[in-house]
Amino acid sequence: MPTKPSKETLDEQIRRMTPVSIPLEQREEVRALFRLLDHASHPRQRGTSRCTLVGPEGESTSVPDSVLCILERVAELLAQGDAVTVVPVATELTTQQAADLLNVSRQYLIRLIDEEQIPHSKTGTHRRLQIQDVLTFKKVRDAKRKEQLDELTRLSEEYGGYPELE
Image 1 (cartoon, rainbow, N blue to C red):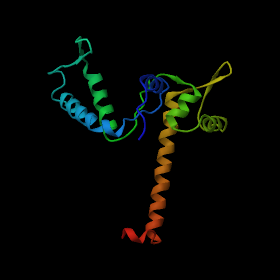
Image 2 (image 1 turned 45 degrees about the horizontal axis):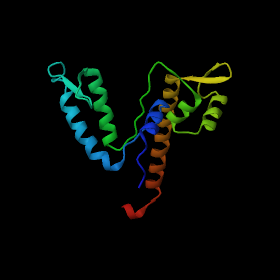
Image 3 (image 1 turned 180 degrees about the vertical axis):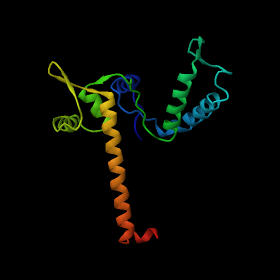
Image 4 (image 1 turned 90 degrees about the horizontal axis):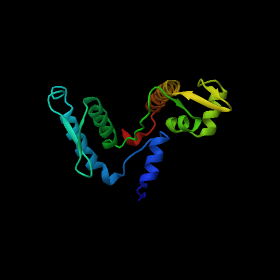
């Protein structure tokens, strides 16, 4: 069973924009949180009922609708077992941050940059990438992967692969 990451490790992951997932034993708690947030952020509820966040010392603050919607989406994805990355949209990424976001090694990312598959700029000797360029590359890459997997599935079905599934 994987060990629970320390608070520092989790903070570091979030700051580096590394995808974060929840331990399996916390999934039911996150599902309950999602249901609560989903109910609170339902469109007809927005603006009519306010959510309040209560801190460890009993202090409280109102949660704006925009933050509530983001929390709902994060809880939904985590409850489904997906990993989540929080990325500021108008930001430059280091090569390590971009590699983490794409779930590839930094060396592979450098090769993609050198092959001019992802635009970059240089700050001194350091490469920087625009978040939008990295997300565009990821979207195109994921679409190509899906097309290729669909083609493999079609060929497998056409040639009678996996007869035990019939």
